[in-house]
Image (cartoon, rainbow, N blue to C red; front, side, top):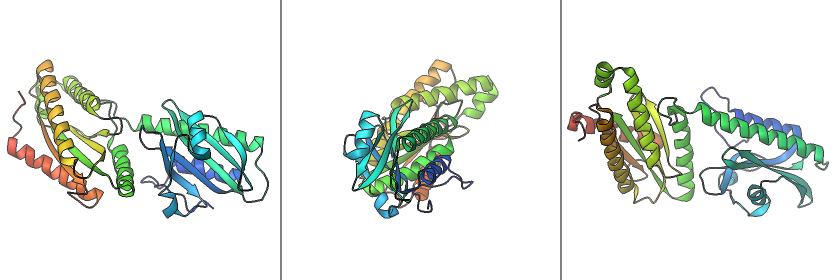
Length: 301
């Protein structure tokens, strides 16, 4: 019954949110169910997992806050138990510390019975569990030094952004940034000062992002930014502006900490530069290393 869930498992083949959704569907004996999650700060919800719906159709569904049953539940933050098209339904908000981030919906009970207040209580508890998994995932996806997300969280977000861009006809850009002199800083000033540099760069990157962008510490002294929801022709200009502002912030940090800090950068855009996620990443990374070789790590003044 849960074979047609629309979501991707992790590398180990297990997605706790997907699993919680599937278990709830089974407990409610639902013939049709959806887990709607908000992708950005905008109050628009898309299908993260589903049962009883063609995956191709599910991938096109968008629910705005206030529209339809699920949209009303998202807007009001209150669960609903009622009738629609001759069937009882349950629709429950998923509330985290960030607000309403999703809605769980179930209908078409397989045994033909009606959903009851007891079923509603079960769904509310399940939604609270899913909310806790979302928050825990957000916590564990953070790099403790930079305060940004980690590499795995970035790669998952990039896959979702690529799917969303194809669906909506928008573009996105990936920007790689590498700190040129970290080995020198660690050797000369110590790893405590090195951590201050990583933290400072992370804070400056985070402060420059739009609400729907995403940044991560990709590893060691390397950072990556996903610039989301860009008009397909605007990617290079948006990326260039971000790179310039990060360079300025890094120069200020270098002067404030008294360390010879500079960055090498590279950007690539979808779909103008590459046709898939792997190619976009590879091209941005290649351009970053070309920049490093060209400038030879000259400190920013």
